[in-house]
Image (cartoon, rainbow, N blue to C red):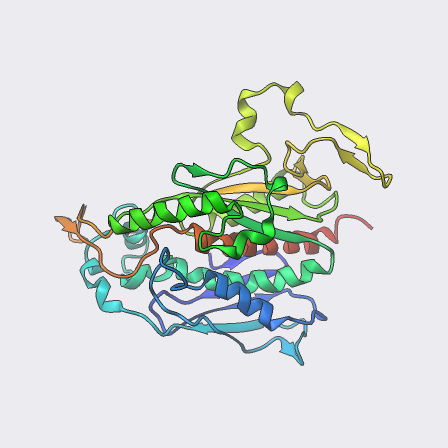
Length: 358
């Protein structure tokens, strides 16, 4: 399945070491004046080669729009775009032509399709997420019309966590450091940990927290269209994502209901609000007007620059010492991808919601 969304739909194409990546955005209403600099800024935040703690692959990631825009405005027609690859080192992956990387998609792609692109992981590479960032940037600009903002940040790397609630953090500082963490003290320690792990030829995982503000009550559908289900599906489609929770999430499980309910009250402006937000802004699968916040857990990258045991596609035992350029930790570059997927999910849900009632 290469298409995301129901009305606002993004279909992506391309592989890590192919000539280009790209996508087609369908279902985007006419009339949005696109800020192309903002789209490129989002791509730059995800771009490889930008610091010592991400992959050294050096791609410009300049997006070229091919259709669906006229005089800077969406026309209602499909928006086609490409992002050209220019810094592929395919020979670095030659040893992986017949050897499966443990915990990577090599084996499962081969089992499903009987043939795979071993160069950089092919379609399974996180390189594909560049197209998602373009789609997310367009959706995000549409959401800005409705006062909806989306901010994500690295809240954990290994055993180093940001314990301060998001509401007490300055999220304008997320992109002030390479780790994408608004807590400067934690960011310094996270960066040192990533550098140490990288020097050992190893990798490390962590958590991205995301906060969506400005969504009014009523977004989402009961049962199979629950807003948290849509967000979870979007987040777990990101390469290396291993878990999702929202509100207090798994922390809820050990507490009593009397500790966890979010009591309603009439706010100063006369609207209905809650005195707490343990629910994470969603109740019954539908937004309640409070901040929507969730966390996405990312595993350590499976490609290690040290010897590991594996097997070949002909059924022989083997060892593998990977070469190539790989992220020692996906968190810094996953932050804009999480924001992009959240933006497309919410905007698509808004378009679907227009048919809820007369």
